[in-house]
Length: 447
Image (cartoon, rainbow, N blue to C red):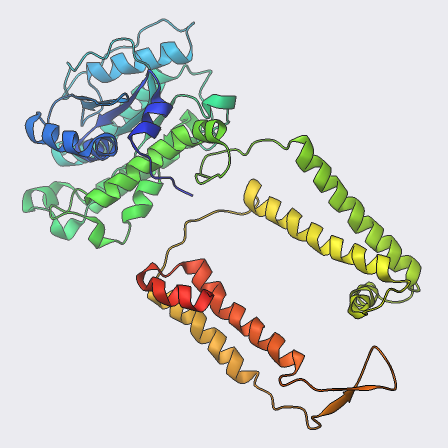
C-alpha cells in the first residue's frame, strides 16, 4: 500500500539529511509536489518567485529539499553532489570524479554537509529536444558517467534488489526516473518536430538495458501512472497534473522511508510497499506452534475414531457433524478440538495475510461499476437458488430424541440460515469497496 506522506513524516525520515532532485522540468514538478507536502502555502509562494531554470532550495519545518536544474545531466553541481553521496556511502573512496560540461546550473544554494538520503535524477527530454544528432549517445554517456561517479565499479548492485538494513531501511539511494513520455498530440509544433516517440522509446530502452548491469534503480511506476491516460497530462502535453506529480513524490518517499517508519511506528502497517515486517515474538511463535499441535491432534483423533479405509474427507465431515449433538457424548472432545482447529486455521490465515508479504496489499478503490456488479451477481445467484417450501409442514421428528416430534417454527432454520448467507453477499461488497458516495445506504444495510 502506498502511503501519502506529510511534512512531519518527511522530517522524521530525512532527519538531518536532505532529499535531492536533479534534472529537467519533469523532475522539478516532483520537487514542488514534495515541497507542497511539507508546506503548501510556502511552496506556492516560492514557486511563483524563484527562477525555474536554476537551482532551488526549500527548507521549512525541518526537512530540506534541493533541486538542481540540469536537463542534460552533466553539471558540476550534480557531480559535486554525487561525490558527497559517494563519500557518505563509502568513506574510503575519496577520489573526486570529473565534473561534466554543458548546460545546467553550476551554482546552487549551500546545504552545508547535509547528506542526501534520497536522490532522484531524470532527464532525456532536453536531449531529444535540442540535440538533433546522437541524442541517444549523449544520453547514455550521461547515465554512464553518473553511475560511475556515484558507485565504485566493485560496489554496484543489482538495481532490482534493495536489501533492508535494520532501522535505516534501504539506506541512502539514487533513483532514476524514466523519460516521461509526453502526450504527443498536445505538444507545440516546435516540440513535436524534435520530441518524437522513436527518440523517447530508444532512451527508455537504453535505460532498461543499463539497469541490471550498473545497478540503476529506475522508477518505472512513473511511466505506468501516465501510460494510456490522457487526463494525467496538463495542457502543454509535456507535464503531468498536480495529483499525478504528488503520487510520483509518494513513490519516492515510500521507497526510502517506509521501512524506517514501520520500524519506528510498528503496527498497524499502512505502508506495506518497500517494507519488511517485524520478526515473530515469543507470543506469536507459541500461538502458531499451539495451532499446529491442535491440528495434529485433530488428525490423530479422527484417524483413531474412524476406520482408516474411510476417505479423509468423510472422516472430517463426520467429526464436524458431531458438533450438532446437544448432549455430551464420547465425541465431545473431538468436537471441541475441531472447533479449535477451525479457529487456529483462521488465525494462521490472518497472520499470513496481515503480517507477511505472502499476499499483496492494496488500498480500496471504489467504483460504481464494481459495486453494482457485485450486487447484481449476488441477486442473480439468489434468484437462481430459490426453492419452494417443504411439502410436509407442521410437525417433524426430533433428531435428538427419536420417537418424539416437535412443532415446526414459523420459519425453518434452513431458510433463516440462507437469508443470513445472502445478507453476507450484500455486506461483503460494501465492506470491500466502501461506497463513501452513499454512506447512508452502506450503514443501513450493515445494521
